[in-house]
Image (cartoon, rainbow, N blue to C red; front, side, top):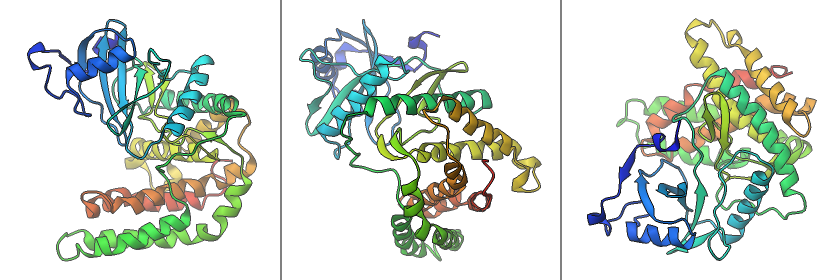
Length: 361
């Protein structure tokens, strides 16, 4: 598949070259100025902005290929961006599949537009959509092991620059978020028919956090730490057929327990298990947990070091903890009641997992 077939495109209409065309509200002339600064040639085609959570991403094409213009959110800072670009450069040098950073004529990997830091990456041709079958997900397990091995090498001797914006919360922070969610949901009682059910989910999540409050800091501090991806899910893994075309979105790269990446990815794996087998199971133990263990084993084969016995033992609790953060932040959405209900429906499953201490052994 050629990369011009991957995204619906819009041809340039010269008569409207002064109208905003990107999610950053750049006109064609302004976008061309950026392309010129990065020595990319004349823009011949523009695509619809991509749906991203934190940064704006606009694809465009020149005679040199397809590129992604990324404007970072306002909280990002230069030292962090340069740290990420350094790591990405090292990954590309080691032939790890990811979107290379383009440098300007002056040799810089970023510029500014107003108060936003702007960067340009090369586009990776890939199949559209999310991919959830075992061949592709197992390939992602091996890719994560490779990524950890290469990040460990790339980050050696480099002072880490942590992200300004986080996508996770420790149990104490999660507890406070759940406390703040209670009045938000309570305000909908008598107005939204599911408000009381949503409030019950919030309170059950609070109770589920209690076993984590005392043990988390001690146990996490004793597990292996390294530089991790921080947002390893299956929208950030790109495929062509069943092969990994690229791993992208390094916005949450950070130093922390490496188990976080495995537990974060496992959210999607577990829900895939339930989607495939949910109508045929009598209980949670009927799900194909051997497939989830194979995923972890495949990670071990590629990783710099296999998971320790302590990591495998704590993995069920780490999976639950991440799931509880998802519930806690649900009340911040546009329809907090519906979002809490939607995200909380699998709480019994994740509580069951947390009680299975040997499920990944």
